[in-house]
Amino acid sequence: MTSNSAENTAPKQRGRPFKPGESGNPSGRPKGARNHATVLAAAMLDGQAEAIIRKLIDTGLSGDVSALRICLERLLPPKRSRPAAFERPAQIKTPADIAEASQLILQACASGDLSVTDANDVLTLISVHTRNVTVSDLDTRVRALEERNKSPENYQASKRSFTEGGGEHPLQKSLDAWRARGAVSK
Image (cartoon, rainbow, N blue to C red):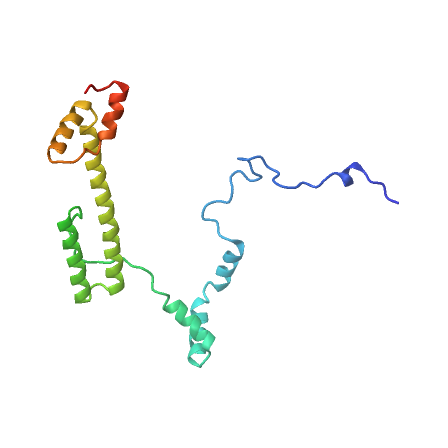
């Protein structure tokens, strides 16, 4: 029968052996370090890549479908997005700029300078930009109105001009609250 020493009965380390912010390798893997297997594979192929590619092409031309697929995937990779070159206005800030930009994109698409997909992508960007400009403009206008109506005197003047046209001022509840606090007299 074997004896159970303290070393054999101690629980094994579970979970995280290091405190947060500490590690067994503080400097970590160096930036740009390549995997060892990748380095070995590149060294083996060095100088032979051209012969391997020629053999793959020859095999593909002889009818091997897998070799053909590999050749096509490598020689003609899937289309990725590319920068769309077209005439555009210097800035897009006003509705007139938006209309001008849209017209230029449609002309570029019609002339074949831009694909329909690229034109659609750019028009989507312009649409998002238009919404952002609109929200920014509305925010500026609301802030100006709120600033103008901050003081009770300005509010009273605003109320008179509104009620003369008929209807109740939308900030009537705020005025009532100011009156309840004693900040404004009737």
